Image (cartoon, rainbow, N blue to C red; front, side, top):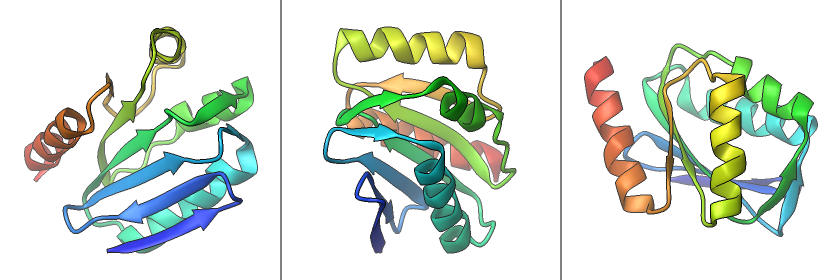
Length: 129
């Protein structure tokens, strides 16, 4: 297992299960620089092996529209799916707007329980094998 913190905003954890966990910390605002750096960390560690992303936005305050668009446009063939871990009805509302209008290139679902998100991501990895 590997772990690092990027720009004091996101913790990146590469688990033995091939799920990359991107965890917002410090009630951060996600910016383009941080998003590009965490993507680079994940891609470098992954080495284009099949994997999945669990993005925990429970401690994220804001993400601007350009950064959201950039995230949605990314297609990395080695990423089977993305799970967004949310906490509140307000974050659910905004995350659903993101899914509806940005239309991420990778299969993406919302979850409130990490165990359910991990189970779905592992199923998506298996489907892609």
